Length: 145
Image 1 (cartoon, rainbow, N blue to C red):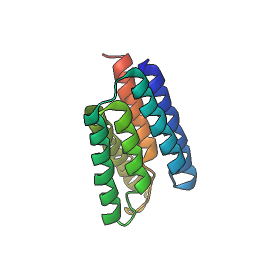
Image 2 (image 1 turned 60 degrees about the vertical axis):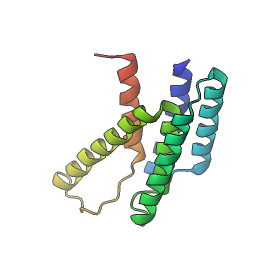
Image 3 (image 1 turned 135 degrees about the horizontal axis):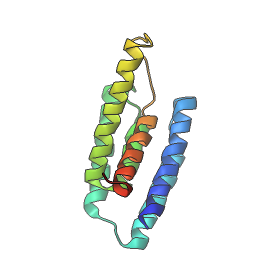
């Protein structure tokens, strides 16, 4: 049944990645629809955890404040994206997804600056790295070493 949950999250992240790459926006209706479906799944499976919901809310608040502080350099949509992954995967897995997303984004930024000679203030979307981190996490569950 976890495959259904990860499919819901994956489809939501793919849509968010496409819109982030194409329009530099993450659409809130996609996040809301994904969150509602994830919560419905957890209620159906009776696997909802107050700690996971609280963790997702804390992540949302933290990154929303970070978005305000950075004046939009870190987008509000990215905060909601990490909230969605937190609702679906739980607190500990979400910490991994967040950390690995930033590691992937850092590697891409170094490549873009060093090899492609982009400016240091080049703006790149975060959703593809969140999707990549989520895929890496799911692959680790279903294809362990």
